[in-house]
Image 1 (tube, rainbow, N blue to C red):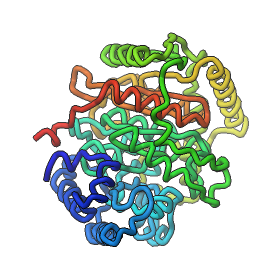
Image 2 (image 1 turned 90 degrees about the vertical axis):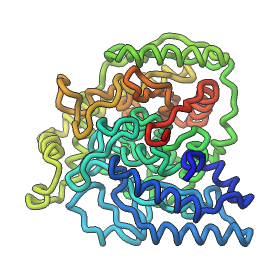
Image 3 (image 1 turned 180 degrees about the vertical axis):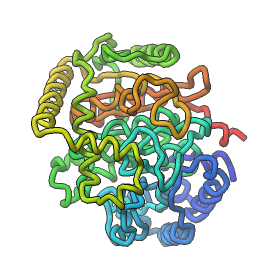
Length: 468
């Protein structure tokens, strides 16, 4: 099994299928072998069904042989986070409380779109229970570990998808993000993760976390993220909150120039303590955009930390996710989830509306901010990956995960597009992420900026399991 095959982009795989240099069956067989060999150390997958995956691969291979390939991703393997409905596999959301049979024969919009474009489902990836926290562990699946150091967390809640992409087990993966759950693990694992503008990617059933929740791509390259966006943005009538389709070709839009863009850089949003390695790498990243012709200005958006408002809204979503569960079912669940949900159940309607007031104030401030600046860049996270199977680092002053991810959740409140791309390794040899934030519905510019940065400063280091 070649390292080249394990690290090929979706675009490269598609090109190789078209020439006959590779086949979907060959690629998927090799990836499944790689998963079997290495996933015991990572625990990125909660369901692998080799027979079903290879059947989908054979069907794709036949289409190429008959010159009838379909869509943008025919034969390309994709990992599916276990919160997306797949018709042939149960969707358990990391919880023992869900009846597997009740989830079959249904498709989430992203899964339906991937099917129309000929994808090959590789399996389901791990998530914390109901996707409730910024690391990935659950009573059902246990912890998911980081390919760069399996003693460290992969982040969450899309940690399984992120670890799988980082470890060369899949070129593409689906993730969700209600407080950083795509960008956190993307940063910790050294991959690309895009949280689209809210309503840009149709999502069904509605998330219990409401309009905080976004579905998006997790990939090794920004170009592959743009390719996935072209697929995932297709219309789906089941999402009543989806914006009108704009039919943007995100892949074609990647080459827009950085010259002349006005980019605000905020090292700490005015209130975050940042690791010195990350601060230095971030300032170097800003210089890359300056060299590409953008005007860089140090500027904080000017809002105070909206942690309390986010926590009210997010943990109310956690309580909402389990509102119909009785005591017997709750006894099977993550005790920390029970704890935050129980506290959220005691919030009043005025508490909730007060949080919504702050949410709107932050959204308005950012809307005005983007009349002056095309983009905002920040670190994705203020720290590197910490010990696995912990919600917070050792000796952290708080017990809850949002306290260490202050750069991500503000932009769930605002619904803006936010992309994490790798910006190097820290002194411990662990990845660091750069976050690029744009005005609402300006995903094309955000992805183009990420692509320009990636081309100017390629992240070519591989995790240890791919270096051997």
